[in-house]
Image (cartoon, rainbow, N blue to C red; front, side, top):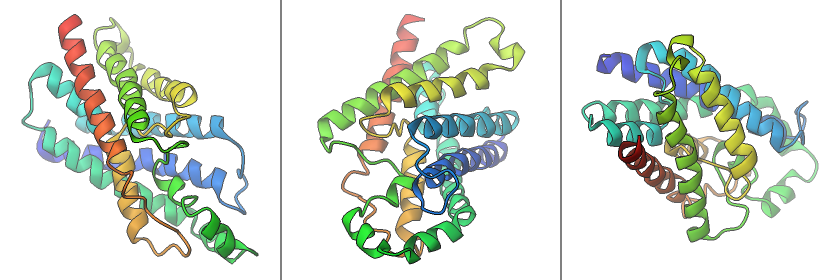
Length: 249
């Protein structure tokens, strides 16, 4: 694959992933959304379907990594580092693009949410509510515990992704991406409670940057003091998964 194909594929695929993921978070969070308060299961499946759509779309061009932790795990396992930077750049750009698109889809809801009676007071009381549409927020703010959660959850993603490559017939049948999508749903349901399961540095960092610069009234803080955890944790988890896979399989 050429650098151009990889970059374009990762931009498009990651943008689709974040469009679905941030979109479902907006649907569940914002007032005047038909899906408001529909719950965590809806969010988990929305992110899973985002992986499904994004990875299948990007696969012919880039292989559909859509996640720096996956790219890092593959590089650690194979020793091939030459194109890692292209993947990471495409993923970050795509994540930012997807966040902007999700914002535009729900633009009227963002505006109506602010205009609703008492919206300013609610925003003051819950300054991270809007941020939660774009990026992850821990339920209990404990940096050590939060970091451990992200590392373990990312290993639970990347190690199976690497192992699926050894499962005879999956690649030929074309259902590998479907299996990975269901894996992401499972991680969200089982391991997502403490931190919101970033498990993807681009997924968190790109939309957080967009949240910082978007003209969302009463949007509150972008919480940059926490932002290193959903970047470092998944990268450590991805590297550990690559080392473990290389050593055992």
